[in-house]
Structures are given as structure tokens and as C-alpha cells.
Amino acid sequence: MALVGMKALLEQAQKERRGVGAFSVGNMEMIKGAVKAAEEMNTPVILQIAEVRLAHSPLHLMGPMMVQAAKEAKVDVAVHLDHGLTMETMRRALELGFTSVMYDGSACPFEENIRRTREAAELAKSFGATVEAELGLVGGSEDGGCGHGIRCTDPEDAFIFSRETGIDALAVAIGNAHGNYPVSPRLAFDVLDAIHQKLGGLPLVLHGGSGITDEDFRLAVSKGIVKINIATASFNCLTAKVEEYIRAEGAHNYFALNEAMEQGVYESAKRHIGVFNCGQKTEGE
Image 1 (tube, one colour):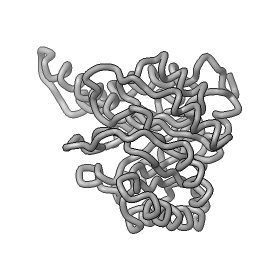
Image 2 (cartoon, rainbow, N blue to C red):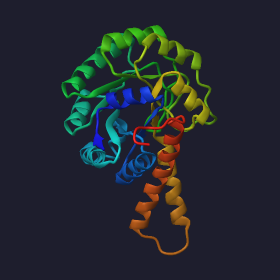
Image 3 (cartoon, one colour):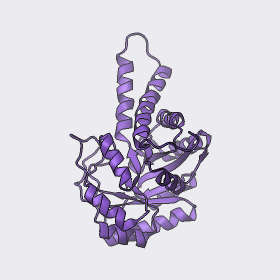
């Protein structure tokens, strides 16, 4: 239907008591696969890319593809810069038409995180865009390198942080981590409950979604999670489909390889959207 702001998309999801899949993409095939899944499920989604991924997927190439795909989609799609690290990169994304940015100052001291996030929020709002931030430490790392530990978000700090920064969504740490989990994580739902109660209607974000159980996804949505990030699962499914194609007998070609990559992301995104919808119907169904 349209390229939309992430704030409006999250608010609609809250009314419908469902979560929104935020699918990380790294090439054209991933964009096509995620949008195809969203259209088939008649469910709005978020296309996103993290700043650490830009070395492999340059913003000046990925950004226009993501924005154009959103504009031409049959469902509403927001385009988001995930884990923004610098004001320069966030500004470039906004200039390309991204409707949301995240500033990640979670590794900074509390007051510094507030100051930098406030600056990011002012920048985003000057473009009419949504801003997300993170408080606490989500484990692992976005680029698959050596990650840091997990520090759960403090509910009192979350209240002060959201009040002082003017953010539209907050990524929380409740035992979740980026990358592949050795075993399914044990999420601190008591902490999530407390944060949700303190922050009222502020949309909460779950990073490190790949590998969390379907039951925990649904429980998290019932306790205030609205945006759910999926990256590793998409990359893994794409790689598995490519490996399957390459192992198949007969001649191989680029075009079939292209289709295999798209199919892997499509299957992963479609399954996750079904889980995040929590049995709710979206508009038009």
C-alpha cells in the first residue's frame, strides 16, 4: 500500500494486539522475499538494515531499493536503520527516505546514552521520522563478531530514559541476544512486565528474535513487545536454500540462485509473521 512511518505502524499493531516483524535485509533478494511474505500474509512489516552491515551492503545502494520496495508494496512497509552508531549515518538514511532510525547508545554510560539519544531523536523528528533506542545490554553482536554480555533493562531507568529522550520505541534487554542461541533463551518476563507498566503505551522492541520460541514470542507481545527484529534466521534460511540449490544435480545459473535466496527469506519471514500476528486478523482480511 505505501511507505509509512514506523510509529503509525506500531500503534496500529498495538490496537490489533500483534507484533510487527522487522526483517533485516542485505541484498535485493532479501527485500523481495520479505515483502512477498508480508503481501501474502496481508500484514505490514518493517524492512531494516543495521549500520554494521553497511560494509557488505552499502547504504547508498540498499537504501533506495528498500524505500522503493516499500512504496510499491501491497501492504504498509516502514524502512528502518537498525543499530545506528553515528549521526552521519542516520542523517544519510533519513535523506534517502528511511521512515525510522535507531540510535544504539546502550554500551554508553546512562547519562551519555540519554544525551546522544536525545540528539538522534531531534534529528529524526526534523525529518518527520520515528526514533528507536536501546537501554540495557542485548547480548551477542549484530555483525557476528565477539559480543558483550547481557544486562537487563532497569524499569526505573527505562522510565527516566524515555521521558528525557522523547523516543517513540524502546529496545529492551530481558535475556535476549543477537545471533544464534545455543539453546532457547529464558526471557525475564517479570522484567518485561515491570517495564511495560512503567512506560505505559510506549512500544517495546525485542532484538535478537531469531531462535526464541513461538510461545515466548506470543507471550512477549502480550506483555508490551510490539516490534520484533529478525536477522539471523533470515540469513541462515537464505544460506540453507543456496546450499540446497548448489548441491542439487544438473547445471546451475544465477537466475535460479537468485530465486533460491528469495525463497529462503520468504519462507522464514512468512513463518515469523504468522507467529507475531498472534491469531489476530489485520485490516482487509
